[in-house]
Image 1 (cartoon, helix red, strand yellow):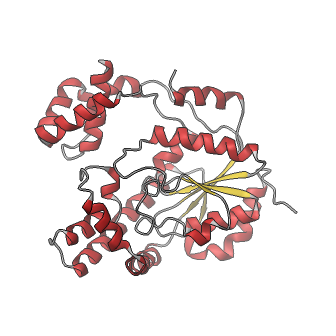
Image 2 (cartoon, rainbow, N blue to C red):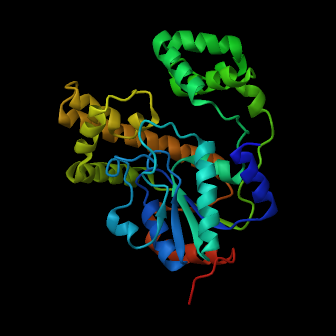
Image 3 (cartoon, one colour):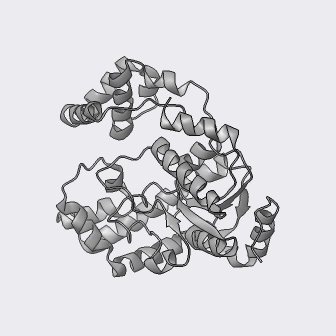
Length: 326
């Protein structure tokens, strides 16, 4: 039994309670999480796939040291950028933190913009087998050497069901599917067909921030300007110096590709900043669409009117028995 499966079994025996906050980039969800942590005696747990990587505190908009001093924060900047963190890997780490927080008599508050992470907790993921490091490294080297189209063609032969869902340029997911087949001799689609098991089954106050489009676009522009003032370019320069595989998730964090292009002399700084802002806006639009379609049962709060909705948010959370300390 894998770690994720073991956690799933344990979760089925003992329901866990939590506050979940989702929303697109720059929507104010981290500030809300901190406010709730201080109000409900909680601890914040990262549910963002980029904020988990070290060395990118500014450009991924991680909480500042001052904010982290106001309430405990977990799973921020805990993995090296050379690491590939899957949703299942994050779910294992998050579940461990949730249990630790609850044992301390506090409330876990999960916040982020990665919808698949929340789905892993609330709906479960298909149980994937562990992949030996040697297999993973070999497959990824082969994908890099053979190229995107040849790797996709191979996947279409081994697992046409998965291959048909992926574009040739999606090297990360293609490599993942090839790894599973190489390690087990079984197509990934077979594992995905098995019913998932939710990890969280207890009382969950689920909140999704739904900002107005133009309000969010202005926020994204302002925030990226502030990131540049705070050292985003220096983070990109340090990342470039490591010469990591450009297909790694951390290398695709919002703003990173454009700033790396500037470091390489391919874009002016002004062009890199504008491209980063555009990428962030496009990503926020995709996030908003995903949340709107996938989080229908979540409590929707207009992000641009967050302050006036705080009483409503408190009342919603209170209804789950997650009471505020006196």
